[in-house]
Length: 303
Image (cartoon, rainbow, N blue to C red):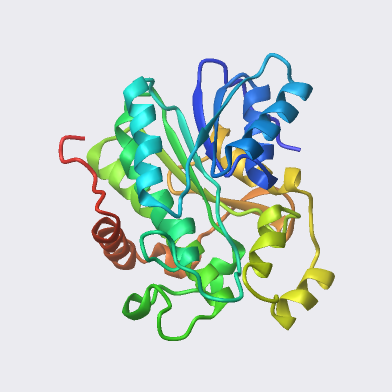
């Protein structure tokens, strides 16, 4: 397993940190000495995760704060709290998400649930926290994508799946959007001279809560999903967090880098080339502009 370098003195936010890859990433970062904020939708579950981390690492510095990425007012409230505290943010881990709800749901703000939770919420959070990130000496933002992004494209004509909802395709689009976010943020950092590293990762096929809860959200999982869940190789949440941790902390991680399991679904972390669609700079710029319009959040001109 990848060993996280010393993180003492660093301040870290991990979304979706109450379970799965988020909890495993938070645990490893806290064990390495970072002060970690478990950014979770349900504080009681966050407190349970905090207790588990402290049981293994009694000296860990871990706190729980509420955020619902499917609600932009919650994103703003969370960001405002951190900004009011004023502490520079060394690392933002955009990990939380939802996968494959069989019927279409909408967020509080009227976005298709997967697009809203997986991309637009994390986009708004990232942009809101840029001032704190840029106060840190060597900040990073790592955004969790998925291997399904390789089969996706951004459908600007029906970004919210209002015409014909397809759960797997909607998830794949949201995860391609995450990868485009990481790529465009890397480009912005280079253009503006920010000492900020933006990377992406994917967990392969990890045994996490997202894979169990999303497909039963309001309906029955598809036959394809039920078959795939029985035959596709799978690894633990701890192993699934390794690419995320590598992207977040390795001295060898590079601007715009993308990291996943060596054997696609399972294995130790390695560098991967993003899908061709994720390297389309015109699509990335257009999606970024659309996300600014939809969320009402934009990069301050003074940064």
